[in-house]
Image 1 (tube, helix red, strand yellow):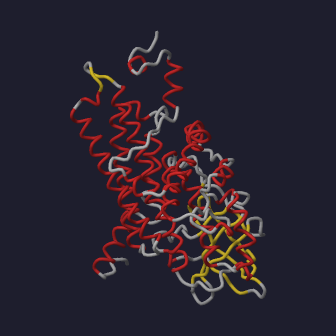
Image 2 (cartoon, rainbow, N blue to C red):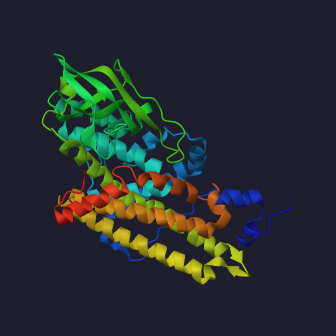
Image 3 (tube, rainbow, N blue to C red):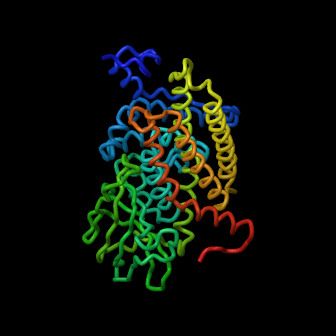
Length: 413
């Protein structure tokens, strides 16, 4: 018996036709305050290139990848091809040579598709390429950055530990001088890309208790990176551990001049900045789907978008998205001038991720029962954003960072 409800009212002739079109990437960009007027042509061109690639190469497979819990690792080369690895790093070091706003709009387009896809790119660019570019010797830069920028090498970032998440200074991973190398021992947890990474940027304490950063190559004896299974979130991204048992790290692989937490925290600021932009993409995708569904789905003889409560939801969604767009743009202009502070980045990350999560929840209600199916992206975004809310600094920790900044009083510990 033919389905005569949603599919017929939306103009579909068969159930198969309905499913195919529902899965198609019909996203239309929403810019209520004409924020695009504040962008340069280079920014818009970079965004469009990523959007075209996402629609052609990623959107058709992302729901299946998430359902099966499989990371589409072949996309690393495509991400490199559209300039998603280190967009704001110099071209001679494997980056894109663009500015921080270009980096932001690229992350927004990637997360508009999937938070895991953005994580694949932001870890490679902000947490691996960036610290190597900023802190490594010229020899190490030349050895690793071109391959990372081209996607021939995959990297990961080892800071979080099983007992040291929001308190990175409590890490237990150590390095001990052993002549021409250091012996690295310890473990890291919740590491994006680690099971497939060719190298890891790892942070550990030396014999004086000082945090040091280094590049550790996969395949070195004593190095292992078991995959973490059973995730309900970021299912299209691969996550694992890093385990080090007397791993010999050549001394030239250790960053020579950066010591203490300033090194890893600067990397996190770079990544959190990208998340502040990226979360807007997830919100936009949920809003776009909800708006379209509200105009197609009929109840009581008219589209549900004609009812007051649905319009309230949609109006509040686009209002919050617009506020987040302006917040991200202003942060980007400050970053381009080298003036964006870690506390300002924390505020934007916290606000924009919570905004996106709340919009995903409201969009799920507008979709009704269809909102829990993979015919629409809502539940996948919703699950992903639950993780984005607590990684790269939890929602609560970012609140305390702002509190510390405005009062001068440290509420940690």
